[in-house]
Image 1 (cartoon, rainbow over the protein chains, first blue to last red):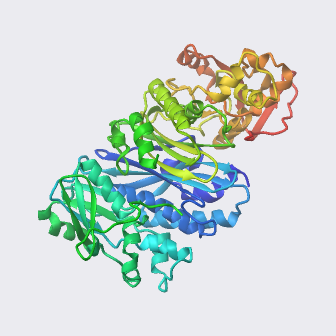
Image 2: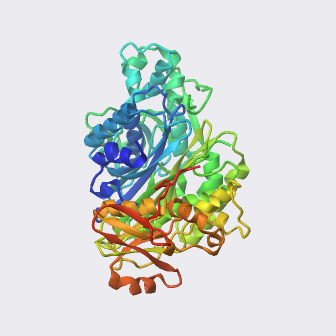
Image 3: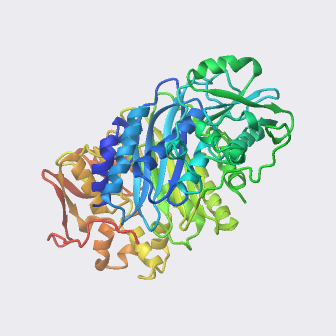
Length: 310
Length: 310
């Protein structure tokens, strides 16, 4: 099955109008009038971002969701995407079928369509890249660098499940409910919250809570105090006990939103998040760097500030 | 040097306003009012699309130019790009410096800026992907499927140099002037021609002349007769003699424009191309498939219709 047959069979059915049947040189679309465009790209590489034996449907969905999370962190609504694949010749049609099924599932869920892409053979490892296109009302894009001293640090959902889930998938810890594993395989992008005017800075937690908080601090010229004991844990993560606090704070792949919020906007933020829990976990201060305060009030020393891929 | 230091040193200086200093989750831009957007993506992989020892500046420029050529084939003008890199840890700073210099050179030449991207470590091979964003006036995008029986087949520039240049780089043929090698390393995207209303179909010659002509035929529900003796050769290609006709017709990477043109528009097409030579090389007919007629008038049998990567 050559490149063109593969595109026609597995990918053309996923294409929206802008994709021109995936037969043209490029995608063509009229941008929604009066909106700004938001563009983001993220790749997933075999043995770096996923295991060779992972279900291709979950790889596809995580590829889209990582990018959708970047749009969420900008306050943008998704429109569509371009897909780039480099696949070893040995890869079977089953793999492609499951991969395309995963794309189709999340296209429906998030209201997006495939607009175009590129495919190539690869020598060894599978390489996947998605470019997501979204839009936002002018002036409503959430910045990364707007936090002010005294703003509070808030985070959606729970933190650390994905990193613990990865350890579970590697056999390094038990995950009796499967919740941690699921969070590692299938993050939930926090799209659709109306945060413009409520937050002064936003980022999605992809590299790890402490490291991503550091990005807001750098961009905003501030320091931060992070209250480790307040960082929300899922029941599955909490059940592992306090030994797993540090990896939860430094692990990546959660795709929750980390927000800087003026103190008087906390209640409005809660209202905007509706059923999605959102938790206050610290405060921005003049200075630089992230100071992590442990549950006992003493500074917590974290071995590594960031996320290392397995 | 970690990912963030690498971005700050080599890539942030290339970023335009939409790139937000390459510090945010995504690029943000206001699309030019009243224009359609054109989006295309193309990847270049080590040992598939380039040799490990190739000059990184030329790899960078070819990455941009392959994508710019896709915009040219749509009649679009470029705006900016996103860049995705997966680089082995062993890659030195020299490589990155040359790569960024090549990007900077062609950014200036084509008036584009870096808007964002993604970077990752790679296990073995370098993997590079560029997403190009362009615009076109509504209704002026050049289609791939609009050719009509009786339309003539035209092509810009000369055909086959890149494929012969690749053979020269592999040591399989002599290239005394270096012209063929240069065409293989550095294609010239045919941007800026005003072809809307003059052509009924357009594609860039990336997979090989015969194969790309076949794409227009399929899209348009037509056959084509290609006059091999009329396919324009550069002086360097012509000097190799008639044995190299078939590889010129099937080799890829030329990035010239292949056009379907109603007979009465030939002169207007020449005028629109100005100093860029454009040559009539065949005609579209009812039916299907590409019939290649040799210089002696007899059908020419080509071993392979398409381009194989080395």
